[in-house]
Length: 422
Ligand SMILES: *Cc1c(COP(=O)(O)O)cnc(C)c1O
Image (cartoon, rainbow, N blue to C red; front, side, top):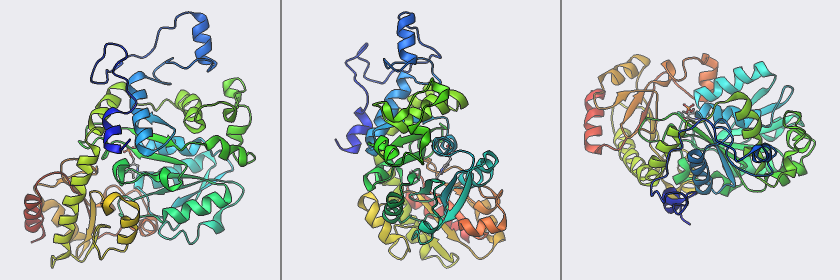
């Protein structure tokens, strides 16, 4: 089935229940068991079914199945935000004493989470160059549990060398986790390129209207074999889980990664998605590919306009033939479309602030992927918690302005930028 079809039909059987055409919202905290044996069977995984909305929910279940199909994965787990999807994905495989390797081009929240917060839990993150993975392999050791990178990064708008990262990871038996938020499931499916686990902030393009905070984790088929092959490294999956009466995940015939994240992390930490948010995301997912095509077309036009503007010093947009990531965008993304993020440099820090304050149609907002166009100064906002050294490392300059191009008419957007730049 093609992605546009999956986005509308996947994971839902309308012939069940009342035959409701729209996926119903099951707005409930808990579920009645038939009897005590049914309850015991559900907890023992002898039978599958809803227990409590912190563990599963029928509305969320449809979104999980639909999204897993869209990404070409085996299973998915919805969580309360993109941040919690990253945390769960890492915490699912790493514990105190372990390390992970993270891309030098990441979202600011991911940088603080993965370099500062998880260090407090004893997990060290080391940085590698995602552009060519040139210093990736040399940093892998027997405590390296995961390689984390963004396919198309926010806010640097860099495309990772996905093929090379995956090849090195496979050779060394290390799990790959790709944040696919900006490229979106409509333009790129990391699992089809061999990535093990995909995470998304569904708050961005998947929602597309700036109304929902959500995250999702998707795993590829066959991860149990991978854990068994690397049994000494991934003991969380290959040895009994004391917190689940000795369950050994690789022995369970269900996709292992989401199962463990659900049964242990969602259970214990509880950053789960509300059913109403799942329902809203089911609505917006239907138009994902239409919207992302339009975001991409609009962004290319604006990037070309900015490139020709005398007040603009540099433009980053992988859809531009002159961009250093153009070839990778052509190689990986559907029709070479590069989503809706653009960054550009102006003369100075003060000029960047002046341009932002002069924009009228563009709203000054830290979000991305909204139908409304947004403008932001990463150095003083999304990335302001990073030190100057960290800023340089993640490629955020004081003169850089980031745009998230919406679905408005491009003539209006260009007119607004023109007056703001002058
Ligand atoms: C926004 C974003 C996140 C965090 O998502 P939230 O839903 O805001 O928690 C993670 N990764 C990327 C690439 C993002 O753009």
